[in-house]
Image 1 (cartoon, rainbow, N blue to C red):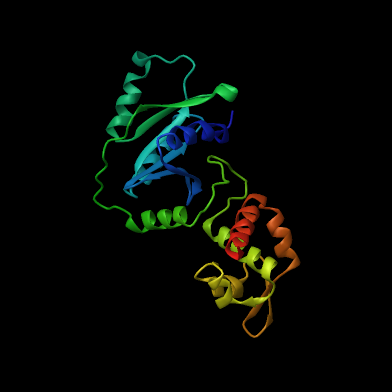
Image 2: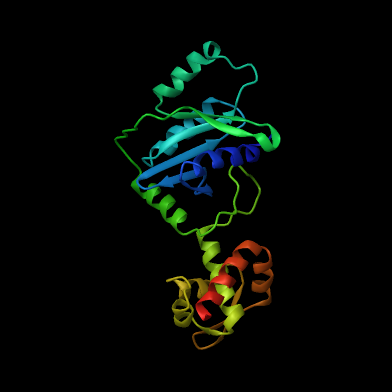
Length: 233
């Protein structure tokens, strides 16, 4: 059993409640947003002091924080009463995940209490929200390690690469006009992934590496290519 297996049931739990769910957002295993509600969920194989400490750290963002763990096989309320008491005093919420193959599901044991922290980390909260809002479709899985995470920045690069692949070489200004990122010039000039090349004064083109890069993200390439095709209609 891995933390990655915990993600789908927990994601489904919040999606059914109308939340926008994202995985692996700025070190958070999972986020869920609906209207003014902001929730962070940390997924772990075991309930531990380290997990509780991680949950407390996430509270600094002002979010309601849940910890999600597999439901104990020998579960009884009497046996876990003292553990629940500690988690509640820390104002954290608890989710149990029952792993049963295709029939796996997650259940909220109790909700987190409103958290009032004297030193709320507004900068971290803003950073997380910007990352959430910068993502279009969710292809990540929460709780993974050693796996490539698709960030909002990566999405912007994919969008720009799709524009250049479809229309050919052009300026950063033209890329923006076709729906590319507002900071298209910085993305093209910094060329973090090696996907772009300058072919003239202020003119950029997609590289062979860029086309190979698009092949690594088929879902996003399909999404942005179809979006560009609709703009042509």
